[in-house]
Image (cartoon, rainbow, N blue to C red):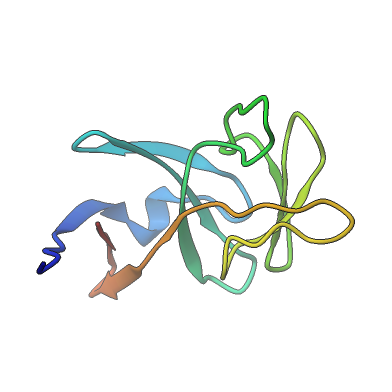
Length: 106
């Protein structure tokens, strides 16, 4: 089975404030997009891996980590892995920076 990916333009780099999450919907997927203090951009599914769920876009960013706004779980923006002592994983999506435009590959 072949998997097809599609790139979605979600805005310009300047539209994503440093360390502030933003919700973007592409197709049927709701993303939480973050720009770290060094200018890197990350896209995650906007759903907490906690059993009770919840949004991630309102979380606090520190370095390359996102702190879940409801449960304070520490999540690596690069891999989606929840850090110990908690466990779980958030789906992450590749981000392409193309001449100031932010594109997400789904």
